Length: 320
Image (tube, rainbow, N blue to C red; front, side, top):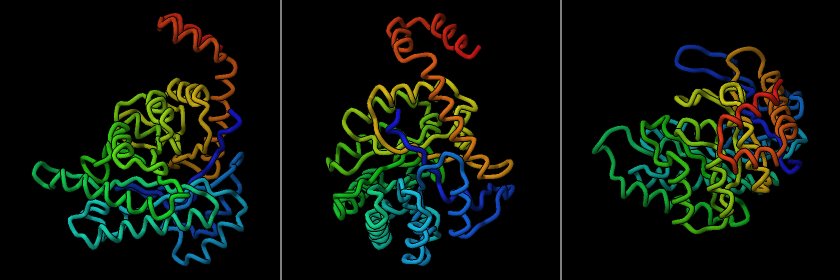
């Protein structure tokens, strides 16, 4: 699996909080880049537009000086007050145009930073109640906006990250099926999907199965790893809850000969973010070692046999 590389979200070196507590304090971009540089095993970084680009030329220079490749520019069209009623699917045409303009800017930054990829999770697009929005119009606006933004730089991939909910009770791209349907509708070679393992678990999907849907047609552009209890997006350490889903996802990414970045969207509610991300990469490498120990041929035989009792005997004995 030498073609899979480890990337860390620069934003996760900064402020982390929920409705009740602040777990990590805010840090400047320079401070966060320095912290990422101390993560053991890191090979790349994901940066966020516009959050990390208050002064774009200065930020670009700082990111390049950090010396780590940029795996993706993450477009945030949800956090600012103006997006409260939607971004790409806002009923306000002016706001929809601003979302598209931000996507175009993100593609330009991705090109300038030699990344070639923008990832975007349109969490503010969707609805909360019945009869709140016009679903047909929303979907049409989403198609129009993503298509216009993606056509701006055909050499830059636009990878859409789905999630069941948050901030909307029902997000417009809630699962892999809808994300792939959007790709099919747009029929643009540079539009694809970001598979966030935690989001797949939330949607009661099997992450490995979702990789098998998205990779063969060339739509799996990017992967975020984390974990949760399949009920909320806790962004826990990979494999801390669903260890066999982690191993299975790595098995299928390898079998599919998928090449790309594995980026870690892991929160630090306890301890130090640098240590948390170092542990994350160590876990991923250990999971790959376990996959090698069990053996791909053995796992394929287990799949072909379809006998869970003997499969899990073999899996757990590999840990002994």
